[in-house]
Image (cartoon, rainbow, N blue to C red; front, side):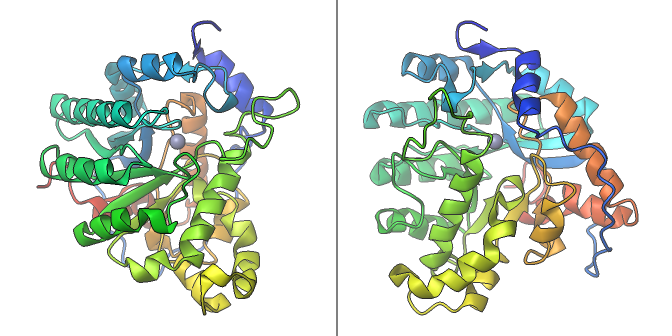
Length: 360
Ligand SMILES: [Zn+2]
């Protein structure tokens, strides 16, 4: 591994060592949905799919992110490789996003330029492969003013499917009052907001000898942290037009939902929320199933999120294709009693959320 790049073997070794490979043997039986499934005639819609233009990775590496979030490096990526992977995995459409560390690498002006670059790149890719790609626009946060400008450009000029927000932007967590003007703009648009973890603002030992790369555990805690912040600050109630996608099956939320609910009474920023309102807010979010939600995490997630809120996600290329295949197989086994529900999770719910490809 040199130059900030790592190979599929490196990636498998890293992820396998962390136990994420436990996607096989997923035989949990899940009852069928009582809802009306959306008819499905083609492949999956992947709402958790990353792209890595060369200029982006070079800029990130030059800014000190050669080992992003404690990982060996950025995975290899090209548009051609992505389409080939999608064809092999029966993924009809992928909604592209830039993963951690995002586009703000320390300087506001450079962040605005890099956000504009990656958003244009995504739009170009969507034009080059009609019907195969949408994208969640990157924003130069925590610069809210520049981000409002980019929201208008990305939606109105580039046709973005939504925006991606990281779990924190240089220490500012979505839900914090500093971001209220941003949420107001997204609420007015009825925007889809894809949350994605990054390294926690505290170092938490990331990068030190005893620690794991942040994506293994800290990303899960970050997602849980930011969603708890959104719920305690009543963002789904105050900004009901925003449709949030929470990644990785809700991370640690399925295990901690009841704790977050009962603890709300002790948190001044949560106002007069009662525990049931906390659980109800969690049920308003969409959840992608990227990662390792089987066999134990998904049933817990479904205790507060309806089947209409479940979405397919690959997390490619950070998740290598063999593990993408394992998740696909696991979902097929899990929903083997209900092909209609499988199709709803793989495609129908995303269609309802995002609309058809190339929709105005
Ligand atoms: Zn991801």
